[in-house]
Amino acid sequence: MTLKQKDFIEIEFTGKTEDGEVFDSNVKEDLDELHKEHNHDHEHSHESKPFVFCLGEGMFLKGVEDFIIGKLIPSKPTEYLIELPPEKAFGIRNNQLIKIIPMKLFRENNINPIKGATFNFDGRIAKIISISGGRIIVDFNNPVAGKKVFYKIKILRKVDDLNEKTKAMINFLFRRDLKFEIKDKKLILEIEKPFRQFTELFSEKLKDVLGLELEIKEIEQNKEK
Image (tube, rainbow, N blue to C red; front, side, top):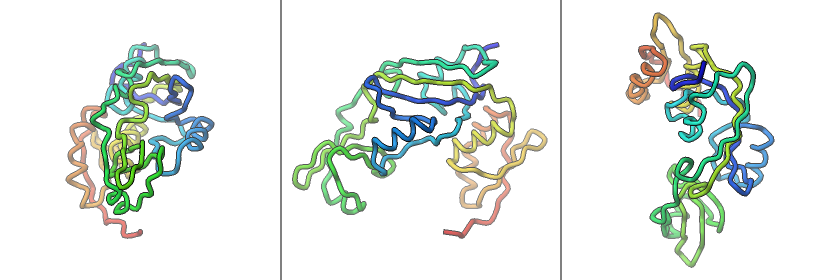
């Protein structure tokens, strides 16, 4: 039996550039190296715990997913080294994503611009290339754009438990844990009233991937700060 689209798997992974620099991982030793290399403003999407995701649904890099789909379902943890050219990884560098930003905007966002630093600018990660007077040249390209990358992927297991699959989907879509119950082919999701409309946008996705109808149970908004 082989892995196919919509199968859930649990993996450990590390992504490196050709010169050996770690740019993403959920393996503790590699994550420690990653955090050492970048300042605290840089955001990383994973923690040092195995990652559960659904194949072919955009939850991981497509080039990696395409490699995994069709591989044998592992009876024990199985490791692969995947080499991806830029066009199958993070794309070719785009010069139009290099912008000149006035110093004033940095001050308004309480950011102290330092050459070489990466920072989060309105939800986009950018790197400061140069500082000249009041003009800051900033690169919004993905830091790994234009580079060949290597992923070391260890497939730990195929995930078959529906509760575990649902938890992984909720984490991916809403970036947080939400209380839920699965009953009679329904996913009953506890959500604060202001987020109801946003949550309902994903009802088709949840039905397509999990085969469950979404039902929302409104709860009081948490007023703790």
